[in-house]
Each structure stands twice: as C-alpha cells, then as structure tokens.
Length: 405
Image (cartoon, rainbow, N blue to C red; front, side, top):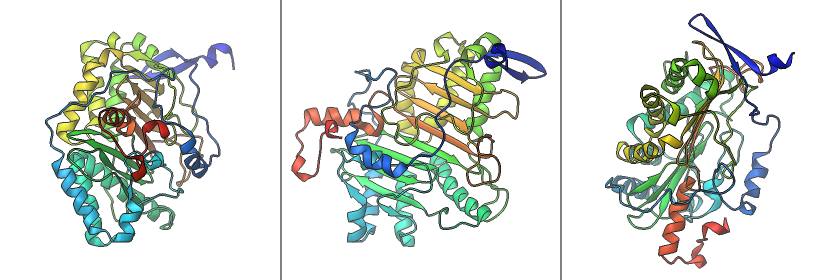
C-alpha cells in the first residue's frame, strides 16, 4: 500500500467519490481482557473522570435547584426496597460513595452485584420497572426494556438462555432514597447499564451504556423490536450534509476492526483529546442537527431533567467537537463521537460476538453507545464532592470521601 493510500479514504455520496484524509487516531485496543480483574483493581484507582489532558476542568457543575421534582423516584425506590427480602436488601444497598458505582461491564460474562430481575418475584420485578419508568423518559424506558427483550432474542438465536435473557439485569442502590441526601441506583447487564445519581432535585445519568446484538428482532417472541435507528440515521445525515471541507475535518480515518468506542467499562479516567470538527465552525443548520443528535441520547432521561442537561450542553456548544470514522454511504458502518466539556457521546457499529461472521468486520447488526459526563461528574462525583465539602459525613458508617475511591 502506498503512503497516499494509507492516509486516504474513499467515501461515496450520491454517486460522488470523496477522497478524505485519515487522521492518526488509532482504533481501540482489541483482544483478550479480564473484566473481573479490572473490577478488582478499582479501589486502587482513585476516580478522576474523563478529561482531555488528565486534569478535570473546574467550575462546570454546581449544586443548584432545577425545579424538576425527584419525589416520584424517591417513592419508587422506597417501594422497590420495601418489596425486597432482608437478604435481598443486604445484597442491593451500598454506601453512596462506594466503588460499586464503577463496577459495571457491558459484556455478558461478568460477576455482578445486587439483585437480578431473574431472582425477583413478579411483584418485585414490577417495582424495579417502576423505578426505571419514573426515572427515565418514555423513550428511555422503552429502549431499556427493548434492550432486555433483544437480549432474550439473542438467546433464542444462539440457543443459550444461561448467558443471555430478558431478566439477566442486576439492580443496586447507593445510599438511601432522600430528598436532601445524595443517593442513586444502577442497573447493570449485557448491553444495558444506567448509573443514576440524585441530589435534591438534581440528577446525573452517566455513565449510560445502551446497545444490542442484534439491534432488530426479525423473529421470535419479540419480533419487530428495533433500537438505535434514530441515533444511527441522524448522525449519518449530518455527516452527509456537511460541506466537503468539514467532512474532511470531522473524519478521523477508516473504521478499524470490531470496536472503536473508547469510554466503555473501566474507562472512568480516560484521557481523550478533542478531535474532529468544532461545532463553532459549523453553520447554524448543522449546529442544530448536532444538537438534535445529542438530544436523542440526553432524551433518555426524564423530560424535565433532559431540558436541564440540554441547556448545559448548549452553553458549551462552541467547545463541542464532532468526529467520524468510516464511510458515509447509505448503508455504511461507522463510528462517531460528540465531545464537549459536559458530555461525551460515542456510537459504534461493532463486529459480531454471539452471531455469525468474522469478529473483525463491523456490521449494523451490533451497536454500542455510551454517554459520559467528563471532567469528574460521572456518577455525580463532582456534585457529591461539593456536597461533602458543605455537609459533614461519617466514615464510620461506611461512607468514604471521593478521594478514597
């Protein structure tokens, strides 16, 4: 391959051939890994947060009223806890600043904490769903449930109900539900992780991981279910609509191998330089399209809190970057990233894991998405730090400062 070929990529759009330069960003490391060993290492890795240079920006997040009630979440969390047995409660409850927040993995083979839907009675399971329903938007709840159902569909396709299934999702609660003290909950399972921190009427819903293999059920018990098509198409439409020069600026290179996402499990302290096309350089139409993409991800949280978050995103729009790997033809496979001081979004077409096909070849049948709050506020950590600065807490009762994590 010539040097020119190594640093050039050909994209076809509406019959036009575009020759775009390949930036130097490398693909995410592939190969074997041990998520259980990564989980065991968490206590030795103090939380910093995702940054561009290893140093979190300060002053981005503050404790302030939102005017959006969290009372329905408190009520639903209390009802869920009340539905559990004493043994289940002991497995489910953790201190607010416990490293269990960070102990999640989007793979199916992972030892999880808490109580699974599989272990619950029908009444308990409904209480768990009710907590999801009042915490998320209607669309966010539907997507979450559809991911669970697609995990069942995967079990149908590969005849493996031991490792895949609708009820193989675990719930934990950190802290006690309160209108004044910090608390939160987590759901952890294959292709679905939601970390939900609550302080007063403020919430932080990151890290959030949503994906599936496959992303559509064409047969079986849940035929017709499909997820992540809007997130896929909206970004492709934006990339196709950009002027050629800005497409070149957004493009980081070819789609490399099975996986490109950088901020999945055990990447809480990722250092990730901003790359690609600055939103500041976009025209108003394309800036609006970019915000619509972000809104699809932020919109998984309840509507009131989604608006609060989008106001935060808009305030930092000029510091936001949009980047891309892969083609831009109608059926292309690709990766994209949206990165700002207050949000990080990644979308990636993955190679097959459970389904047939070479693992190194990405397809539209397997998608991973991840949303993060950079600069130290994943899991609401920066809000918790500020709360601790203003309120005494008692380490003797199992509470530890964020620095101890």
